[in-house]
Image 1 (cartoon, chains in turn purple, orange):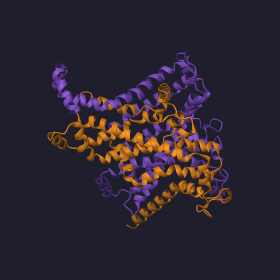
Image 2 (cartoon, rainbow over the protein chains, first blue to last red):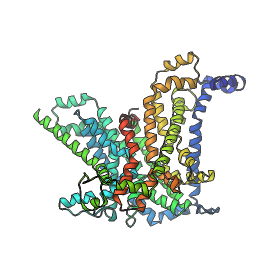
Image 3 (tube, helix red, strand yellow):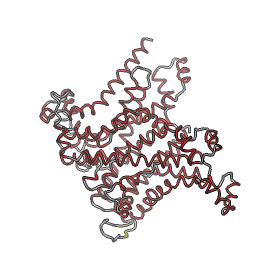
Image 4 (cartoon, helix red, strand yellow):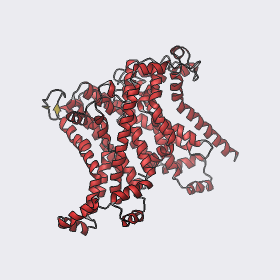
Length: 315
Length: 274
């Protein structure tokens, strides 16, 4: 006897009232129960690993707590007030914003160029597509390892190539002026294939009739791009911008491997700061406040996305 | 006409140049892993080693229990991928093929959890698993990842497109709901399942932050954490570090080259069609 028939039996004996009211709205009790049963693992997971932690992180952010001791010290909004006066936190926020603005803009430009290049009917384009996409597949840690070596001022190939061209390259990751830029370049390389695929799909969704009409009007390539392709890619661009912003606010792995927030704090970003506070200094309350601020920022970005992006997309 | 041809030739050359630039870091990694120490620190840019030297790989295997890291990563990735597949199938089926009150609202909640950054819930999750006594354990690495909202999303969207008549026929033949899911819906949904499997596996294989905070002994480290640790122990031993990186990348690359189309399809369909 399977779940459905058990439910059918109980529905007859016990839940006439409930069953009746469900029926009125076009549902059956057995299907309702089965649906909820199938969703049980997800309910439990959302409750235990999402909703509870969300509530608990807010709760903890009102306390001072060093994790080891059993005593939590209520400080109200104290942690948040401290955050506002914490130069390291403000610095990390600042670096995160810089990183986000630059990397998202560069990623949009690069991935659009790649998508336009890959949107051609030529032989071997499939191989090129897999090549451009491949950095997405490797782990951030592996990519960060390789790029640490590329950036090595003495033995790395970037400065060696620059040397051949007669340029003496900077001490990329060791120079506070260059470290964040180095991380941006590496991150763009790692992620551009992902966004290029989104652009590519959007490009292929543009109806040919627009281009035919433009050809009849004698529009040149740039005009076609400027007045047809680019406006029609707007939903994809917005989506990429939002995804890029959200991902940029969570940048961590490459920072951990390549700079550890240095030199002199120049690559200290919000998640790295949270990690240090929580898992190296065990200032759980303070780190929770950082975590909640991160949540608020991403929440606001997502709301903006719901308002502006989704409405313009065809579902 | 000639101008048009020239333009597409330029585009092609640009695409190939870009492809080579994109590949360069890997080629450099691979070349370095096969070079001897002296060659790495003396010669500049050659991508082909003078003579192949496996010293880097030997050293990597001596300096770190890479086999153990590999085992941990495979175990954690495989089990959580299997778990995600089951939970996504059940939830995706319920949310797409069954009718019950609150269905769309529940789906919205699940989508909503996608905007909670992992890092924000990391601290309470760590504390929670500490209460369970699961720090530095496989449960701790796996259980929080047994549900993947994006997987539910992919499966649900795919199943919405399956015609109703198919399962009605099976149900008339006396199949229960679970049987219908397994015998009728599951075989049709293979492409969506493949996408979920590949996404989950690469996500788990590449995940770093959670295994970093969750594990505190060498035996429990996953490949990514082990790799990062190796770099902090031997920051300048490039042939050895590149060898370890090559080893760590082999599994995802194998999977990528076998199932490329699913990677791209997954993004294309999820990204643009919403």
